[in-house]
Length: 410
Image (cartoon, rainbow, N blue to C red):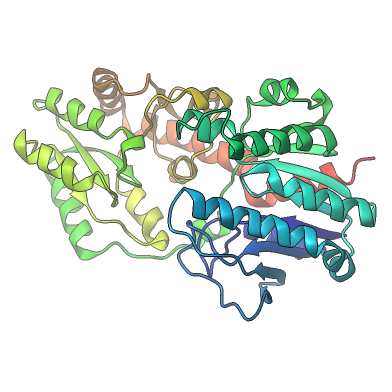
């Protein structure tokens, strides 16, 4: 089968995020499918830009044919990003016959976060009588309205709203990473039977084979803390406003007499302010550590007693969440404190930890104390439930096969 996946922000192990097109594509290639991924030359989430020669550049990455379309540069949300989006979509429409000729797709997947790529995707699918899938990462234009404060009457938003409605009406299937978004989609024209939930996943072989050692600085600090009998509750990830790490510091203020240390690993725009606040309150039970490489994540998490993930309250989370760091946490087989209010709760579903309201310091402390009072065997059993849940539901080998099973129906 020939699969054409359009994702403006597609990445790879060579280029960085977004990894999903690469991880799905790699699994499809392994079982004999021909996979073409079409992406823009410019993306704000990649760490390494592709090398572009002319308007159209091809590259083979682990058997996946990547096609990079040259688009104007941009650095942040605003007019230049909108121009970049319209350039990418416009060129796909202009060259849609070329994509039909060079890929002969059986399946066309529109997966660019924003919904406007459904237009050229449908043009390509119709010309080759291919099945059309609309893959939803975030709900556009609801995300820029609720998170970015854009007016529903803004011309850009009106265009995206038209595209979202068009996609739900004309796609053969709607693959959603958001588990509880079906009603919203039906309200915008989707037939209920089109909805399929296929979440983000984890590259299990990569995780299990990772052999990165911890930096000596991290290793020494964690060794010293364990020697002092501290129960380590770790957060590993971006230090941004959305991550609600002030709640962790507030919990640390409340837990000054408990043998609990909160270990915050990572970088981000809020880190310096959080460190200053910890110094101001003399929080000796909070430790800040730099980021580690992806290969060192399993080693880092294995040294902790429990793992914490939190997010600010956001209305959009009613449609569900699928944070990548949560999958790492669960693969580490450690108890998880889930401080997110969302339409889904993998921690509760799997039984691998304790779910609490978002941004509640007292609840964080209570959950940490509960876990600290468990025996090692109880902690291990709880953590193992998370690992088994990931292997059954979030392994990209499993998700890729679910995609193929879907696309071979009918």
